[in-house]
Length: 287
Image 1 (cartoon, helix red, strand yellow):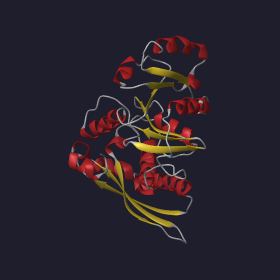
Image 2 (cartoon, helix red, strand yellow; image 1 turned 180 degrees about the vertical axis):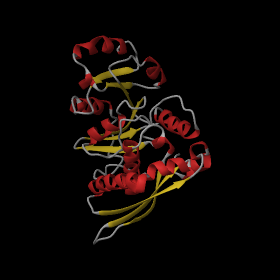
Image 3 (tube, one colour; image 1 turned 135 degrees about the horizontal axis):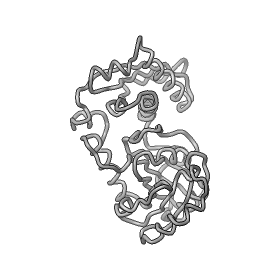
Image 4 (tube, helix red, strand yellow; image 1 turned 90 degrees about the vertical axis):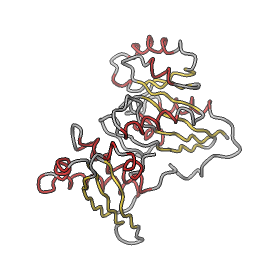
């Protein structure tokens, strides 16, 4: 069979996580309309009868301004080296010449968000320009949002996969990450969805307790860390209404993910300047 590693790279908010969820056919990673929602490299495993694709959803590549952003971009750039195929995701509105120059091997260029174009003939000049780059092996227009072009993209990726005697991972798993990781991601996602401006970027989520029970609800206790007391007040909201909304929506998403009823307990704590402290960044699980 064929099996290999594919890094999904691109600028923030280009749709990498939405694409991974669409390729896998399930909600695995957090998505929001804000850039930099993804902070970790996340493996998602697509199993088909004759191939296995191990996707890496990476943080966006951008110019970092603090320590946590530097770690995120470093993760994304390292993924360009440690894979069999690089899949560069771009939008149909601008030419990403500088992004292509960062690629180090043969690349599948995926033009996302074609559903936003009034006339898809507008793609032709852009496609012709991208064809001038030697590293660009294939160009696939898609819409990760509505699924247009996804099956064709899978077939293109499969043609580039190396032959293997057996798959790298068991064929009954979706990721190498555990449930605790994805639960924290879902809580973080709701923070990005419900709070505006810079508040989501000052937060990170840690799972303090995860008790699985054969009968009754799973018990999950998580802490949302912020950098300032003023941010804590915003996260909690008037009479706790804001944090209650986050908890309610996160609980629904978690129950859908693990297919089991959940009791979710959320706390908010201040860890001053954690985004600039490498020790804190490591403690919070950022590599």
